[in-house]
Image (cartoon, rainbow, N blue to C red; front, side, top):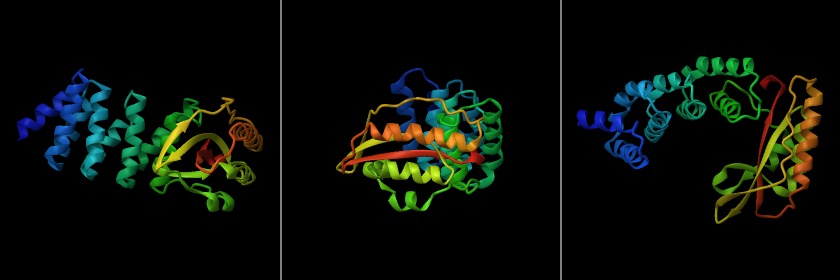
Length: 241
C-alpha cells in the first residue's frame, strides 16, 4: 500500500485533470494513513494544482499531522495555495499556525495589499477563527444576522442599510457586499452594481469609514430588497490596516 500511496501522490502533479482528480479521490478513499506521506511530499510538488489537491485531501481528514506542511505552504509563491492554506490551518484550530499567519500579515501590509483582496480576507478569517483577532460585531448587526442557505452568515436585504450604518457608527469600514438569492436552502450569487472605488486606508480612519459607508449604501440602494435575497458583508476595523 505504501508504494500505491506514493504513486498516487506523484499523480497529483500530473497535467491531466482526470489524472490528478482521480488520484485525489483515490487518496481520500484509502484513509488517513495517506496524510503523513502526503505532508512530506507536498512542499516539493512542482504544480500549484498538485498542492491544492493535497490541501483538499488534508481538509478531508482534518488530521493535525498536516499542520507543519500547511504552515509551509503559507509561504508559497502561488496566491491560491496561500489562501487555501490559511483556510485549512484555521479549520484545524491549532494556534501553532499563528506565528506564520502573523508573518503573512506583515508581508501583506508591507506590500500594500488592498484590504479587500482575497488573501487579506482569508488571513483575517483565519486569525479570527484561531482567536487572534476579535471581530467587532455591533448590536444591530449581530441581532440582524441569519443564514443564507448554504452560504452561511448573511443579512436580509431589507436590513442592509441599517447594518451598513450600524457598522460605520461603530467605526467599522464596510469593504464589500455580495448578494445571494436563496431557494430551497441553496444560495445563488446575483450581480449588482459595484462601484469598485478603491478604499484609501492611509487616510484618517474616520474618513475611511465614511467613504466605505457611502459606497456600500449606494450599492445597497441599487438592489431592491426581497424576502429571499440576502447579502454577505465584509468589514474591517482600524486595527486590521
